[in-house]
Length: 181
View 1 (cartoon, rainbow, N blue to C red):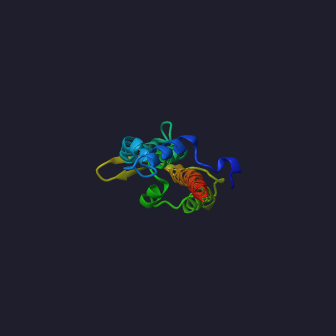
View 2 (view 1 turned 45 degrees about the horizontal axis):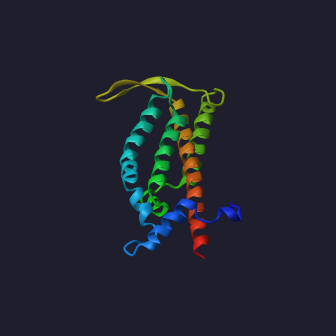
View 3 (view 1 turned 90 degrees about the vertical axis):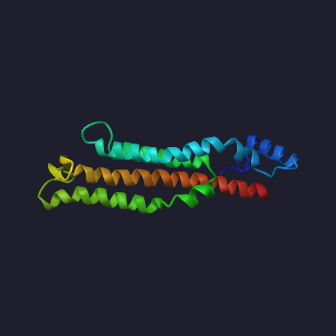
């Protein structure tokens, strides 16, 4: 993926901010942007664990109410998107250790294995089985094999969206390197 030559330069707002920083003796390039994004960056970092919990909630309630693997995966992908919006690409990738291609592969493997698991019992592909499972301190909870399929969808959606985010973020790194040359 290579952008058009006219799109390789820095955006106008960033050029204006860098020009302001360059004119001031006590500032270096990028200080205005860092100062401007300080509060949103902190808020987005604080929101990350809350969005992870929302994602888990959506994942677990997906069989009885709206939610499931896709909705939960999109929610978690939004958490990663907020991290990229609120910080520098390098800072985000230093903190977050997610390998999107492995998540995609594992998601496909889990979803396909769940679907083929029904064949072992003589049922058609993706036939679901449900029963109640007794958990200590919780009691009886419903468990369906569709939960495993949803796990595969969840991993696939998170991996694919994070892969897209990484590609877009690295494109911004390439354009800033091209502007420096």
